[in-house]
Length: 125
Image (cartoon, rainbow, N blue to C red; front, side, top):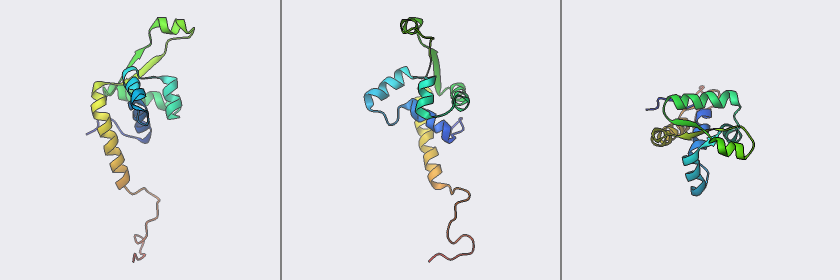
């Protein structure tokens, strides 16, 4: 279903952009305005070298939009403009579905290296 590889880091970025875990008022603001790069980095605890390639892949897939902050806002605060990222209309539809599928798949898949009784010749009673 997904045209984006749903790695754990990608899932973390999508959850942040979707405002999961936020109250409904804050979630509405996030969905409308998005988050700028440094704020996303702090929320996801991902380094820039991980975060920005994920954002670019999501943008190329049409799940995320990016835009520059207005000059007047940045100048009024005496700092450079920020680049914001937000979920696109396509992303608002497919990202929650992809997250749900990834979560369901992760809960079913056995993880390598985890011992499971009865599989190595032992018995399960």
